Length: 264
Image (tube, rainbow, N blue to C red; front, side, top):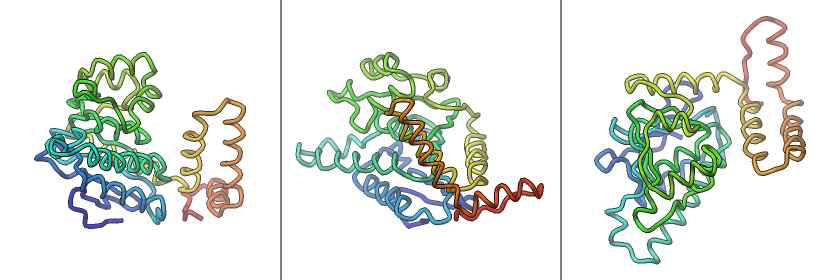
């Protein structure tokens, strides 16, 4: 998965982990058409073949911005048809991120505005620097969130809070993001990546098939009634009963040793 992208830096900081860094710091890591194509390729590749990858950390280059959203300088010269074509890329990229079988943690190192915040919300959870800033600014530009933001924000922070954030378009602090359920934890700027990688390593140490099925059950059950969601949970659970990792986990517990999970 460590491809040579032009706008994303993909690294293996530890066995089982990938770190994807949005790498346009001179443009506040805003996504242009090239970055969208590369992100789509990255998430599509993970969906098709996770391989040894057990967790992904998504962050931005530098300490100023996670992602400022779409590159408005590039968009300034677009006609309506080109704009719509680019937005189809955004839609597919977000769909593939949401469908990624392995957990994705956002490490929000700076400003996450508009589509940048939508990227954060599409991840499984997020840690943020104490100096991070957030906003959904689309309505100040004659637009509205179109990469899932009206749905993912309302599911994270509640419909009333989402309306306040989206309709006003005003920035809010990392502390507010934490209190509203948009991020899970605040870290000092110099410790953000270490603490995010520690969380990713804890996930990577667990049985990868079990982690993927648990993620699938949580995500899939969100739009169901409780009764249907519990049925779906059992469907996901049943797929683990015959796995080698399930047998290894129980055997390791009884032998009082660390399990050796293989993803089979």
